[in-house]
Length: 339
Image (cartoon, rainbow, N blue to C red; front, side):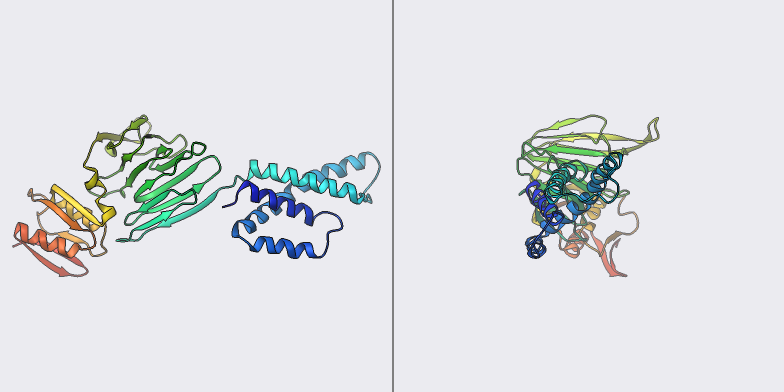
């Protein structure tokens, strides 16, 4: 991570390299400093770019002033003045970097279908990613932001009063300090829990519309404060607002946390769940989908029990035995059909 301290060191190196009478060993020392860490190299590159921009402005202004005084283009600055100017430019570089190039680390993490991953961020926050999840993390000096592009994640946030932790998804954002919560963003068109769901495990979070984010069918109409055990779910209502954006329906409940978080144990728990919804949930974890043939999704069959998300075949066999169905494995999928 590029810290302000590293940025300051890089700015001094740039100033020294552009100063008068630099020793031949200075370039080697600078290269050795850059080799110590990737953050050093990145800081030096940023400082060099900013140095060029700032020095053009500063030296251009100096040259213009010299021209007005009649000195002309052949001016040669004394070494002491050149070194003072270099140090002054280093100060300007540090200030410009703080304003124009905030020190932000950006990383992207993703899991494939059936994969899970645990990531410990640089601030110590633990992030658990469920199947088919993609997030972008931005750790800045004033704010920690995670953008969820799809999937499901559990956040165990390290408290930092100076930097709120914000998770953004589908036009809404979750704001926390030190807390534990999960966020699930279902792909458009899925049957189960379509939309955005935020479940609070510990602490306190605010879920609110993102001020500068896209507003769509899963955007909150107002801010809501969650307490431990609360879950807020947002989904498109299917109609249109006057501005052309789809209205969202909001539901706040208190589910069984062990059931909601079963995926962290590679489990799926169903309690009198419609068969079609249970199948859709299991299909999230497998590239070999379960397909209901005929009217199986319409005849009221339901599923209860605990199943391993890594064993969709076992789930399909159990459902077939429970409801008197026939299981066929063909063409890269599992078909459940009536007898």
